[in-house]
Image 1 (cartoon, rainbow, N blue to C red):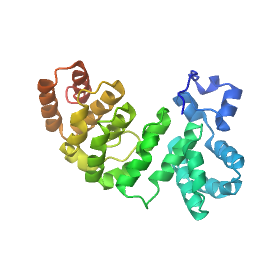
Image 2: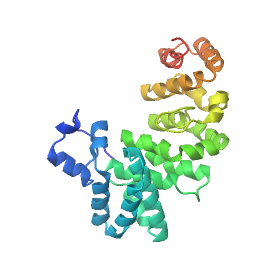
Image 3: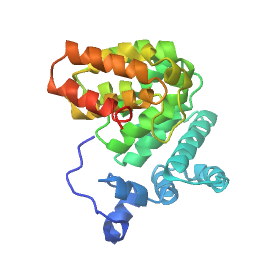
Image 4: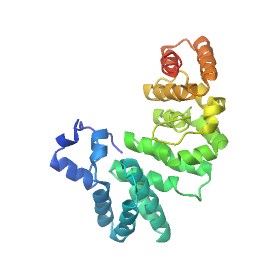
Length: 267
């Protein structure tokens, strides 16, 4: 997928009618969070299904959306993705998953990420392998949804997940390195906590250690936030680790991570 070249509107009211129509038709990617929140996923779904001759999938998905007690962009996105998985499985329509995974619209690719997260037939190694293209996506929204879609499985198979993701920290793609950190944050954002990592953050050292002086700010922010999460339940561990890193790695990158990691402790 090519990176977005245009700038998005700062307010929903500033999104042009033509732009919003193109977004709701799945003809372009969202350019920022404002546009991402503005897309009508029900309209988008109808257009995508109609364009691909699968309008018969629409009604059962809309019924599920009507049952959501607190519909949000994320809950709608997840509901559509998991419903699509059930439908394509029922109709043996795996080709449609390929269409969704490679679609120009970022929210459609987010649905595809949730079809992977909802596939209970996949072992954790297969699941992580399948989510890699979404973790490496050029669009910020797809990358965020990619870890959210499988976080519960990562928490359930934590030891094996850490073993696999520790290898991702060596990848040249900063998006994959960031995924390894962000997907395992003890508290995270808009997600359930991983209680085991809140109490035993040292389990994630195989992920954290290789990233302690990462050249990418995108990765450093995630590692700093990871440790700040951990500091709320295990401040001693975070303090000791940061002290050791300060001695072992005298770089501005490590100093940046330490600054973010200790912000709660030093309040």
